[in-house]
Image 1 (cartoon, rainbow, N blue to C red):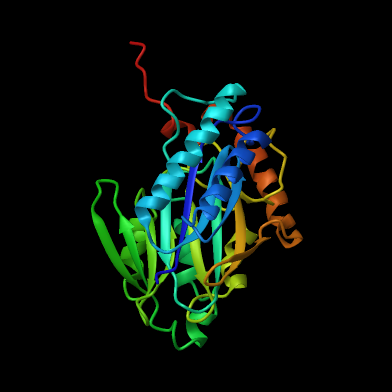
Image 2 (cartoon, rainbow, N blue to C red):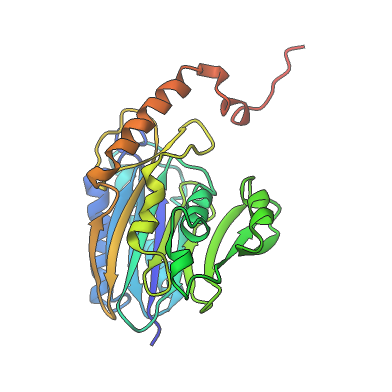
Length: 313
């Protein structure tokens, strides 16, 4: 029997602006997920939020249609509750959700699930490069025989063209593509052909990463968050925060990380990985960087990409 981990997310209305989700909306998601477990549609699941986005992390037997229907029901129910409460950004027609999935092996394994808010599509590109291609971040690339061959990166160009790069051999060509508007959507082991990571392709993207046993360790996967890399748009740096983070008064790009030990029938966890005090320095650095960027005002380097040019001649 297949064992698939799927992550789905959607914006269903923000609690006081777009920085949080009302507790009643989260409760609606948990109730829907509990009903799906009771009905046997999923074997286990977890509800999480980042900013004003809600995500479901579910373990199931591979029925993609049933899981997609679960996502549609859950986010529609959340949106209905949010609309009744007058939450920010509730639009007619309900939310559209995104999905990423990875088929797991039969043995228990470690899987990390990340969400980003106020971040553009492709926000994980640099992180995926650091984790799966940079030996200064991931020494296992040189010491683990299963990783010395490197990893394959599946990339989608802005025009929809699919590109494939085998690193380290295609390093320079990959950097030329992924440093632009292309999106790294999947990483595969060149040793075993197993999927190592999958990322969603829309704004506020999700990321699922498998760790250990031929993949980078948890520590290597988290290491890029020690520096708050800037992402496109007005948010500036992408800040690692706790899943319990309530500070929503300033607009930052935020990232959360959940760690699970996955068995045949359970998502054991999660651990709040980016709430670790080891990332306090990154958070402080991000605030200082954001202060500097905000002082640019409308002359911010990112602002030119956000507004169309209007001639007054």
